[in-house]
Structure formats: structure tokens, C-alpha cells
Amino acid sequence: MKNNIDTSESVKNKERKFGACLEYVPVMIKVDGKSKEALFTMNELQVAIDRAKRNPEDIPEDQTFWGYLFN
Image 1 (cartoon, rainbow, N blue to C red):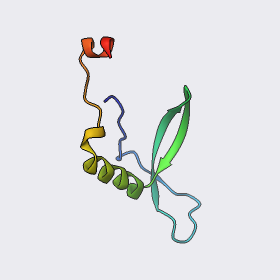
Image 2 (cartoon, rainbow, N blue to C red):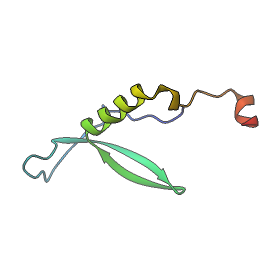
Image 3 (cartoon, rainbow, N blue to C red):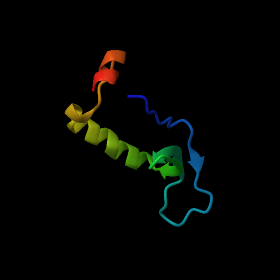
Image 4 (cartoon, helix red, strand yellow):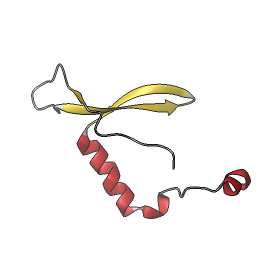
């Protein structure tokens, strides 16, 4: 897997409403070939981490060069 999210690169929520998260983790996501900006809360990332723990069979394995060519 080649995708990474660096949680050390958080940004403050500048115009925060009452009860809103204090900071977000910014990421670039490629959708239909176009890069788009996105903001995730640490809670949203934790939900994704928990989902991955419950479904390890769905995590892609690193492919070898030959596996990449023939899959």
C-alpha cells in the first residue's frame, strides 16, 4: 500500500463553532483522477483504524513487481 496520512500535520479549526473539533488532519485525495483537499478529525481516523482492525482481510498486501504486472 502506498498511501499515507501524517497525523502530525494537523491544522487548527480557525472559525470553530461551539462543540466542533479543535483541529483537523489535512490530506489530498485523488477522486476521478483529480486531487481534492480533505479534512479529517482524529475521531474519523480512529474509526477507520478500528474498521481496518476488524477487517484485516481487506487490507491490500504490498505487491511485488511481478504481482503488479500480472494482477
